[in-house]
Length: 273
Image (cartoon, rainbow, N blue to C red; front, top):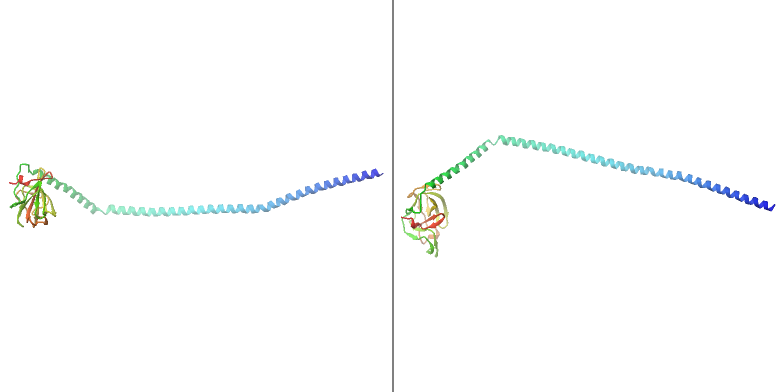
């Protein structure tokens, strides 16, 4: 009898344990089933926030697209305005060119006159060259005395000579002929006046081409009777004796007379009669 009671108790305990296990399993499954909807609900609650974020991002993207479109429109407007301004500037330039093309008829005439003047100048040069070709001075030609007077300073390029006014010795590439102020000066040979200059040492100075590379230079002059480009015959009046410069105050009034051959000084006394 006692054994049966113990067996019954054991069986009952096993049944209770089985029931407890089944109940626990049921509770566990129920808890899982409840938890999953809660997670889904939480996820569902979080989803609007994500959607709002995505919506905001979409709105920002749309705003940026609108801004870019506005910039393109502004750039297009600026471009159109630039095109309009360029068109106006081009039109104004075209009108200016048209007026300039029609107006300067007189200026073209002046330019043509200038060109004609420039073309005339070589003709004068050709005349001068033709005149020089007519000159016939040569190594054996003679010079006329350009003024009556004594030589007070001789030509000296091989040794120095004394200058009273300067109180020094130096070489002298010309001759100095004593003359009175106002005396006439005559051309020593036929030639063409090539220059008239004012020199500190020799005052008003006239240079004349004689031909064949020879040149005659007359200094200490005033009141010239000829000018540059004139053809002068031998013995013709070319000017008058002036007061001496400060380089010749002690020597007195005079004519400075120099003869060049190919630019180098030669002794005029070798050619004067």
